[in-house]
Image (cartoon, rainbow, N blue to C red; front, side, top):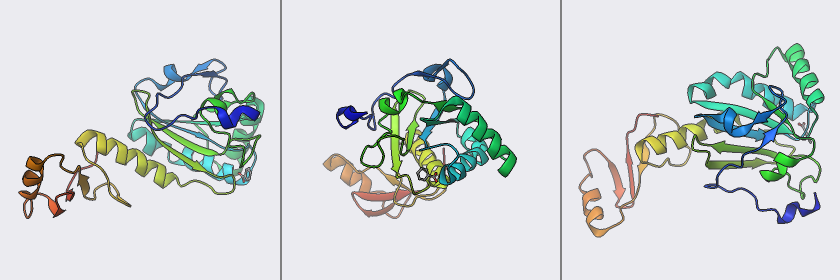
Length: 222
Ligand code: BEZ
């Protein structure tokens, strides 16, 4: 684990590294085959049978239909064993009545965690932080979120992030601060003098033009 500081971490825009692993759904799982044509939300948690992680796993499962409607597959990972994962999933079903219906990778040798830069030695040299990788159907990493061990993630925000990426892709726009589906989007700024004049011509018509570089328009969601 000592070389973690020097291993390049995948970044936004990089191809998502492919790998094989043992998961709760398959002893011979290959990421690229499983992904198919879907988006993926790939998240790590520090450890099984821990409280914050339990709330996160259950919430991802409760919201699985919303992810599925966005063509998103969910997959989790920790450096626990497959036996631990299976026992924990069973326990969560019994205690909280929620089935964890997405696969969880048993990454005992930290192979996948290291490939994705999920172990941050300053936070913990033995377990994964709370990472989220949003991967598009072309297997490009489109967004990365990291949370520390003691703060649970916000599944609403992960869904919002996927919707924002899909909307931006579908309609060649960007999304402003705190954007929610259905709200106005940002029109990409003009790149030439000619485009500046074109943009200003939208003022008072179909765009809300604050200035040439800051315009909004209505947009249905992807
Ligand atoms: C938790 O999920 O509660 C947790 C896991 C690892 C370290 C700290 C908290």
